[in-house]
Length: 264
Length: 155
Image 1 (cartoon, rainbow over the protein chains, first blue to last red):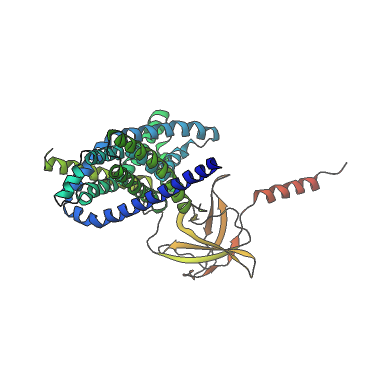
Image 2 (tube, chains in turn orange, green; image 1 turned 180 degrees about the horizontal axis):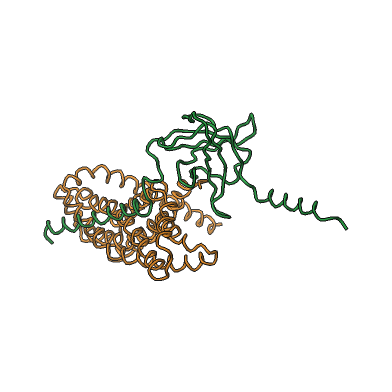
């Protein structure tokens, strides 16, 4: 009897904890937006963060975009030539990259490359009581530390995703046209006929923007919320990567079902 | 790192990102060519539209002159009502025939316009009177089998 009661009690505690965390994250987000104006006035703080999370992620995004495109080129050609329509390779590469792979894979890479770094930085600042020291000096840590990192991530993400897609298309072209020898004119013209700017490209940009908000928010929140010990920081980083990945994939499903429902 | 180098790198990053987006818009998506700036709408009723979809191209002599914007069902005549927009630069005579065609054997379906010889032109909101429905493969095969059976003398 007491065992069952304990089980129910633990379940209740878990639910209360989860709800409390969601509420805390929402209030954190609202405060973050409120102090964003202050931090955006000092633009160089945000520019610094764009450098750290955007510019330093360039290499991994460019290289993995190229390889993803090349693999798509090889695998797509392998399947399409069975049906004698290898010219449709461009369509396959471009549509899968602009609609799905570009935003999603770029966001996953961004979460593990930049999101984890942001969490570690803020978590360590909290552990060494730098955030408290700032508060004592009447400097708002939300405006000085958190908001620039958040906006840096949000601004970087769509640019990185666009770059990923462009590099992927280039990789697909490299394999399909240069190495395998698919007709170049058909490759580009079929791609241009099938890819719609508003429907495919712009929806991909919207997706990457939403992923940018999710990843950046999770990263700064986990860092700000971490237990101020060495172990707490390491756990916070793990949570950032895991929950970012889950949030990206779940949001991707929701966005896709709104954007591409019942059309063409 | 000094502030100017930082600004330079971020500027470089933003330029690259924008260039990638421009590449996607121009080279991959080909913005502009498939969307006409100014359009006018025409309607046509078909007995059967087959697999025609919204945003399918409207072609005349193989050139894309417009897009299908809406597909509805007319409850009075029990026919499909297809609305499509044409670029204002393209005018067609009153006795134009609208046909639903398939590109290739199994390709996507589109609306084909065959211009007639009338001096009066169709204007926005007009209905194309003469239409030809989509060829439904099952019906075609059924008809073929029926004819074949009728041809062979029973023995």
